[in-house]
Amino acid sequence: MTHVALATCRELPQLDDDDRLIAPALAALGIEATPAIWDDPAVVWHAFDLVVVRNTWDYPGRREAFLAWAAGAGRVVNPAAALAWTTDKRYLGELAAAGLPVVPTRFAAPGEDPETALEGLGELVVKPSVGVGSIGARRFAASERADAVAHAGALQGDGRVAMVQPYLRGVEDGRGETALIFLGGELSHAIHKGPLLGGEPAETFADGLYLLERVASRRPTDAERAVGERVHAWVTERFGALPYARIDVIPGPRTPDGDDAPVVLEVELAEPSLFLGTSAGGPERFAAALAALLG
Image (cartoon, rainbow, N blue to C red):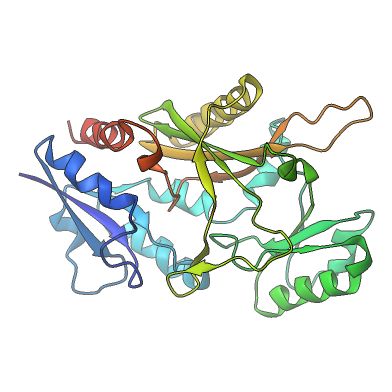
């Protein structure tokens, strides 16, 4: 029997609730799936026909070790090159340079003056360029500039790159954030996420690995779908066909004529929640995409 590993972390040894839907869908295709902790030295990764990166939420503090594991763990999906790219959000600059619509983003590496990255911005968000689940992301009012600089400086002091973005209020008008999930190269489904950086502290899950999200199934607008498909095509050209990808978009900066076309917030190719349970047939489509890789 073909045997697939579903890579996870120590805090989620049996995967999260959503990704537990994958194994039965694979079993229906004659493929055995086993959760395996990515940094467990006892795991023989080359014994698997395929290693699927799923709940490896604990990599931000040791990204280099995670990428080294991915490069040496056999047939890993998504592939190591895609994992290296997507786990540092400085890729947003690359997407912008390619003419793709992204949230305007500035970066301040350790040793650089964080105040420069905040110039001219009002309400804003500061977060690490390497991070998951919105951990370390904080929203600041225009009057809280000193606090924003201090947070950016704290990230830099930990050896991390701080990223600064304007806070786009379109996420609060009912549209929020839309995640477009691509499986096997096609748009499978989409979900709506409520704003995470509101006034009340968000609840964390699994020893603080990520913030809990309020999600619901959603049909994307034509504009959201078009942006997602453009970015997915660019990523596919860069890394080849991928079995899964998630592209998150939010309403962009409002122009004087009232336009706030969608812009990309994140491109998740590593450990994204795929919200398979929100879409009828979602687990089966993901299983089919993985089976296609196995021939």
